[in-house]
Image (cartoon, rainbow, N blue to C red; front, side, top):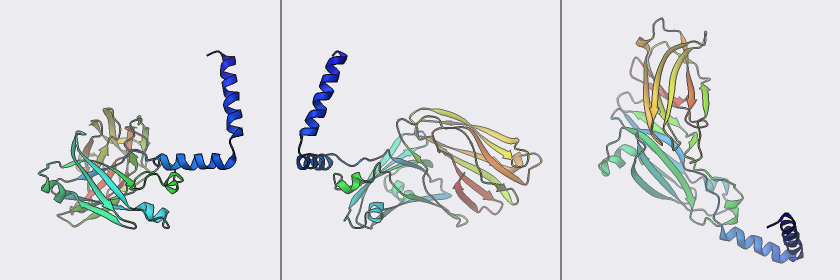
Length: 277
């Protein structure tokens, strides 16, 4: 088609659009809205730990009820469990009613299905049953909101962490990262990093501990990640000569934007404290 033909066609379409009566145009827009499902974002990713010492629990509230309380919304939570190599080990669906929630004890769930996996990635989507309602379209791209709870079965330590990554097929490496969290080394035995890779490509990175005073690297360890996999990096404080009073985490190249690791501080007593790094 020549440029002149393209211009003539565009002018014809614009003229036709202007000729459509407003009530007809509004009816067509409404019909289109109800015919097309709401825009669901990629699954949201977080890690579970199920190594016998640490238990993981998933909790998901029906956030549609909070954001659109006047709309009676039932939904289903789609959950995919992967092992550390990025292989799917289980798929689950759970219904959630208006202002309802669901929760999963991963140790019990895996035991019921004879699954052995000491850590891995969880992918979550929450899908409203009436996906074509106009109100859901007004929310834009929708991503699941949920939390993970971690419990140390030996000391009773607990942590509560929300996810920060999505398993978007378009994910690309996110570049260097330096944590703003300061790690006081007094009474600290280990720093453990749980790193996930929410991309579809293998990824190699370097986990580093730096002295916050000098900004120099005091200990560094490589980490190889399978697509949609995860790994655990352990830094023992007795590995560091002349241990500084304060440390921070540094990474040369995240697997995707904001896919920073979970940071676990393990103290001499065995108690832990976990957060995002």
